[in-house]
Image 1 (cartoon, rainbow, N blue to C red):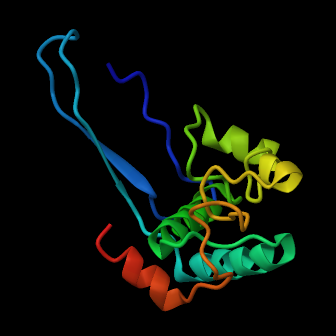
Image 2 (spheres, rainbow, N blue to C red; image 1 turned 90 degrees about the vertical axis):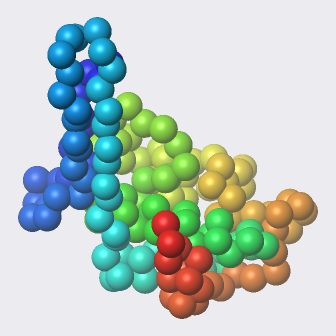
Amino acid sequence: MIRSLQSTTMATTTTPRSFAIVSPTTSPSRRRLLVRAKVEPTEKSVEIMRKFSEQYARKSGTYFCVDKGVTSVVIKGLAEHKDTLGAPLCPCRHYDDKAAEASQGFWNCPCVPMRERKECHCMLFLTPDNDFAGTDQTISSEEIKEATAYM
């Protein structure tokens, strides 16, 4: 049963970031279908998060995943949260209240576990000894677009 639909938009946002379609039911005991469609993050936010990610990888001595698709999806997720929440909240975790988590800052990228122990749950920043670490600390806008074109 769907308890509520939390809006993922901020008060200052003029375009909706998600919407829901709830199928009609004849009885309260029947399940409802929820469909969400997301608006793509702005190119500006994707570029900001791309540059941030490259800079932080160099600063921290970490590398992007050998599969640039992973890096691309995480960067776009951070950009979407930057647009909708005003902060680059980690896109790889579940939150009951994203706005509250973003305001607390613990899971804003780079999150506390990354800053303190170099542990990135998203696999965006990988230490050289990680089996999935590539050799790159850069990713182009074109690589991000190509890797996420059919999402």
